[in-house]
Image 1 (cartoon, rainbow, N blue to C red):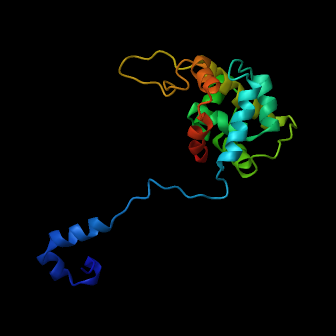
Image 2: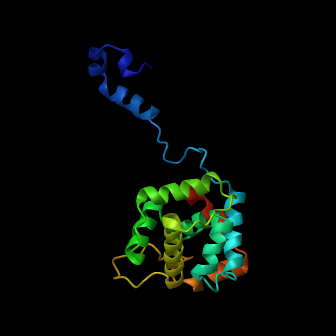
Length: 194
């Protein structure tokens, strides 16, 4: 059957339902696919960051910011792993970090940091201090606090974003995943494109 733009309007008017059905049968949504651009993080790179974080924290028994910050500089993809564990997009993490630490982390700044890491996930970062170092420290500190705290109590009609199997009870939620060898990194990896 020809498309509506291929026939005279009078013909469409005479059989409108058929042409509407034809158009709808051709429509496809692309929401189930994502472009795999140069910033796409492959699973082995993501897993290396998760495993580095797991080792640094003793299977998530001690999520102190200092050692985690050192790990982020050594294995930068760890920063993206932390973001995925939180379930945040870069701008959401920047906003929460700015609120909690009073360190200005703009959307542009976090997108730049996140993209640089995704483009070169295994290239160690240089700790030059400065504003970027302050932002990374604030981001990691915020992530460690939130992941340690877990989801706060909310009214029954509201569900908190952290009220999920891996973060609802803070470290108590993360430790069994690490101890049992659950392929947690595999589950998280798909969020790194956010």
